[in-house]
Amino acid sequence: MNYEETARGHHRSGYNCSQSVYLSYADALSMSARDALHRSPVPRSEGGKCGAYLAGKALLMQLRPESMDEFTKAFVEKNGSLECKVLRGRKNGSCNDYVGDSARLVNELIKRG
Image 1 (cartoon, one colour):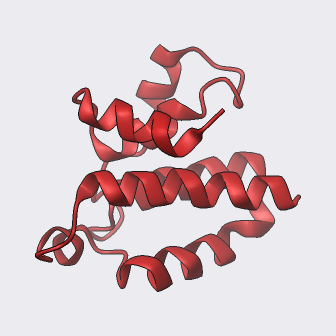
Image 2 (tube, rainbow, N blue to C red):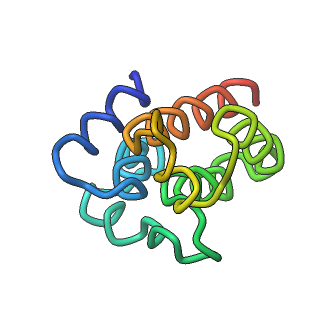
Protein backbone atom coordinates (compact mmCIF):
# COMPACT_ATOMS: atom_id res chain seq x y z
CA MET A 1 0.00 0.00 0.00
CA ASN A 2 1.23 3.48 -0.79
CA TYR A 3 0.42 5.35 2.41
CA GLU A 4 1.71 8.65 1.09
CA GLU A 5 -0.60 8.68 -1.93
CA THR A 6 -3.52 7.38 0.12
CA ALA A 7 -3.08 10.14 2.70
CA ARG A 8 -2.74 12.78 -0.02
CA GLY A 9 -5.91 11.48 -1.65
CA HIS A 10 -7.83 11.70 1.62
CA HIS A 11 -6.62 15.27 2.03
CA ARG A 12 -7.69 16.22 -1.49
CA SER A 13 -11.09 14.67 -0.69
CA GLY A 14 -11.64 17.13 2.15
CA TYR A 15 -10.31 15.47 5.27
CA ASN A 16 -8.09 17.64 7.45
CA CYS A 17 -4.36 16.99 7.59
CA SER A 18 -4.45 14.86 10.72
CA GLN A 19 -7.43 12.79 9.62
CA SER A 20 -5.82 12.19 6.22
CA VAL A 21 -2.65 10.70 7.68
CA TYR A 22 -4.36 8.73 10.45
CA LEU A 23 -7.08 7.37 8.16
CA SER A 24 -4.49 6.04 5.71
CA TYR A 25 -3.25 3.70 8.48
CA ALA A 26 -6.66 2.48 9.67
CA ASP A 27 -6.04 -1.04 8.33
CA ALA A 28 -2.58 -1.21 9.93
CA LEU A 29 -4.22 -0.29 13.24
CA SER A 30 -7.01 -2.85 12.70
CA MET A 31 -9.68 -0.19 13.07
CA SER A 32 -12.54 1.08 10.99
CA ALA A 33 -12.29 4.31 9.03
CA ARG A 34 -14.86 5.81 11.38
CA ASP A 35 -12.77 4.96 14.44
CA ALA A 36 -9.62 6.29 12.77
CA LEU A 37 -11.34 9.59 12.02
CA HIS A 38 -12.49 9.93 15.62
CA ARG A 39 -9.10 9.02 17.06
CA SER A 40 -7.01 11.29 14.86
CA PRO A 41 -5.42 14.16 16.79
CA VAL A 42 -6.91 17.63 16.53
CA PRO A 43 -4.68 19.82 14.32
CA ARG A 44 -2.75 22.45 16.29
CA SER A 45 -3.88 20.84 19.58
CA GLU A 46 -0.33 20.62 20.91
CA GLY A 47 1.07 24.12 20.91
CA GLY A 48 0.08 24.89 17.34
CA LYS A 49 1.85 21.89 15.84
CA CYS A 50 0.98 20.64 12.35
CA GLY A 51 -1.84 18.11 12.29
CA ALA A 52 0.00 15.88 9.82
CA TYR A 53 2.93 15.75 12.25
CA LEU A 54 0.63 15.06 15.22
CA ALA A 55 -1.05 12.20 13.36
CA GLY A 56 2.31 10.66 12.46
CA LYS A 57 3.42 10.95 16.06
CA ALA A 58 0.19 9.32 17.30
CA LEU A 59 0.56 6.49 14.80
CA LEU A 60 4.13 5.78 15.84
CA MET A 61 3.12 5.79 19.52
CA GLN A 62 1.00 2.76 18.64
CA LEU A 63 3.05 1.09 15.91
CA ARG A 64 6.70 1.81 16.74
CA PRO A 65 7.13 4.15 19.72
CA GLU A 66 10.91 3.96 19.73
CA SER A 67 10.91 5.84 16.40
CA MET A 68 9.10 8.98 17.55
CA ASP A 69 12.24 11.08 18.03
CA GLU A 70 13.55 10.03 14.63
CA PHE A 71 10.19 10.94 13.08
CA THR A 72 10.26 14.40 14.66
CA LYS A 73 13.82 15.01 13.49
CA ALA A 74 13.06 13.84 9.92
CA PHE A 75 9.86 15.91 9.69
CA VAL A 76 11.71 19.07 10.80
CA GLU A 77 14.64 18.37 8.46
CA LYS A 78 12.25 17.96 5.53
CA ASN A 79 9.89 20.83 6.33
CA GLY A 80 11.78 23.21 8.61
CA SER A 81 9.22 23.38 11.40
CA LEU A 82 6.54 21.55 13.34
CA GLU A 83 4.31 24.61 13.69
CA CYS A 84 1.25 24.80 11.47
CA LYS A 85 1.38 28.59 11.29
CA VAL A 86 4.98 28.56 10.06
CA LEU A 87 4.41 25.75 7.57
CA ARG A 88 1.24 27.26 6.10
CA GLY A 89 2.90 30.67 5.83
CA ARG A 90 5.52 29.47 3.36
CA LYS A 91 5.09 30.35 -0.29
CA ASN A 92 5.92 26.85 -1.43
CA GLY A 93 4.34 25.13 1.55
CA SER A 94 1.39 22.89 0.84
CA CYS A 95 -0.55 21.07 3.53
CA ASN A 96 -0.95 18.19 1.09
CA ASP A 97 2.85 17.92 0.94
CA TYR A 98 3.09 17.80 4.74
CA VAL A 99 0.41 15.11 4.80
CA GLY A 100 2.35 13.07 2.26
CA ASP A 101 5.65 13.58 4.09
CA SER A 102 4.18 12.43 7.39
CA ALA A 103 2.57 9.29 5.94
CA ARG A 104 5.75 8.39 4.04
CA LEU A 105 8.01 8.92 7.05
CA VAL A 106 5.80 6.79 9.29
CA ASN A 107 5.88 4.00 6.73
CA GLU A 108 9.67 4.17 6.38
CA LEU A 109 10.11 3.97 10.15
CA ILE A 110 7.70 1.06 10.51
CA LYS A 111 9.49 -0.89 7.76
CA ARG A 112 12.82 -0.49 9.57
CA GLY A 113 11.41 -2.17 12.65
